[in-house]
Length: 500
Image 1 (cartoon, one colour):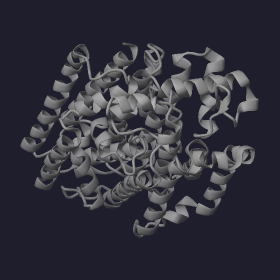
Image 2 (tube, helix red, strand yellow):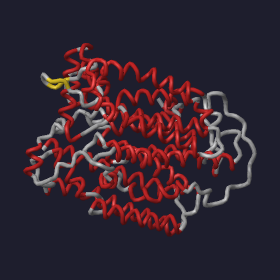
Image 3 (tube, helix red, strand yellow):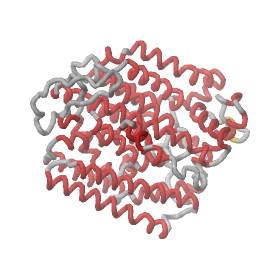
Image 4 (spheres, one colour):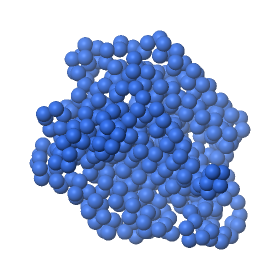
């Protein structure tokens, strides 16, 4: 057994950790009402009807054409294997979360190194909104994973001339899969970001590395059998599932309860819900402004790179790229000088900035499938924060970084009404349980310890960074631990509300 664990690669440990975070107690407690029960019923009905309903999901006696039918396939399969229940309904989303965390580590490692890959995976895993998505029965988790995996694979292939062709091919195939699972809202962000990066990214021959004509052909081949059959069967009735999600029309929630509670029916937002991003990413959202502005400037290292140490021998044909940056863990791979490795890392950062902008713009123009939970816009922000923290581990903590971080704290306080987003959490809990007027005192008491720990931990990490003038590894580890505590607290509170 010991020898088995010694043979595990870092990517295997990331997948194992993601599974331990998302899979335990997955089937405990009832499904949340109304969203989880609604989508679980669609998948269960598809499993009961068999392959004949593969492109015609239904609820009761009515066809449900508001979302792509392919998003329910895995849920129907899990229901056939494990039987109807909470575990089968949530299992596809949990597996999608494990796959996304593993892919994020592997692909970011190729573009920015092992350290950055581990931090990006850590930030994603400890972002409450992502944890809620990947432990729910929503089919949107599959679309988010395909869309985000597509961009990360294409970006890694674009910045790394030595990347195997299979990286770019996988990115294009995932783009086609995203079209079948989420439609235009899932395809637009990665495609727009890659086009902008290939145009604005500098002297690197990004388009040549991506092989766009063959890649688009692969995407079409993958998407066609998922998109064409429902369009042929249902015509214009299904077009909105692929082109214009409209949560206000498809919501299974009881609108009378919404009116009785005196809340506006704002489930279809005209823009990105920054408040949801703020509480859903706490405490990482504190660093979001610094990450977006700092990485968009594409600055060189805060500390000048060490003298070129020459080329390192290749570790073998099957070896993963080993970066050559500062401390042998920056951005780069064998055969690259430190300056070129850093340039490649900054190019990857810039591509992720464009991705975050494209994701936010897509949600603003097309609307969002999610009721005040823009997961597709949240994941790029979480990736940016992970990349930013990784760069700060290699460089000095400047006064500009401190000012942007303090501004992030102020922005979070304004958006979420309190530092930990308790008001936002209360509103989310109200939609899970519309009959609850507010958070019960018992639940508030359960929430107190992660709230205090997260607030104190985030403040201590900021103070330590300012005093030491450098991001140390222990600060990053403390931030991940604090975020994990807060994430587990949020998941526990919403689970308690659902079961109460």
